[in-house]
Image 1 (cartoon, rainbow, N blue to C red):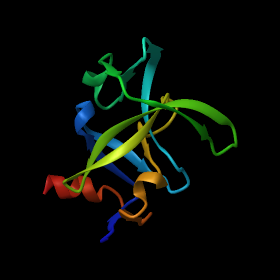
Image 2: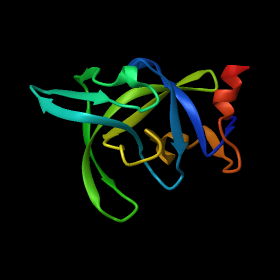
Image 3: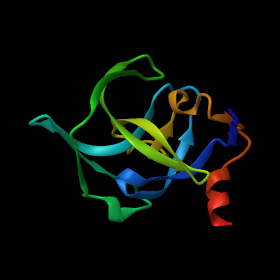
Image 4: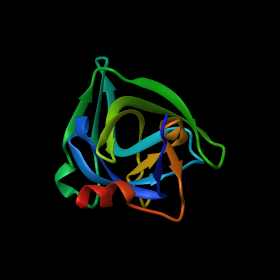
Length: 141
């Protein structure tokens, strides 16, 4: 498989979530990928949440409902294990749509609303930390 070079940060679209040009941080230290959301409620075998992004205020307060989701344990860099919900979705990078699993997390204290981890990057990308916005710049040209 031919791996693409990706930088330490970029912008991606999430077609199934109707989110475009969302800032993403590429994090080889993280195993799972996560996306910023709040108001996460599980009821009647459905998972409901609201995706938020300061750069895209029109996404605020738009509720999403998922019938299919998992519960996973994510260990943070400080060693604390946390139970999170995980959804299956899609991400568009370099003009190609890929399947991705995203854990739902309140990332309001973080600089990036989305963190892309090794589980997604493996066998698809090589990370060059000196570069950024390779996919985004390709879309703009």
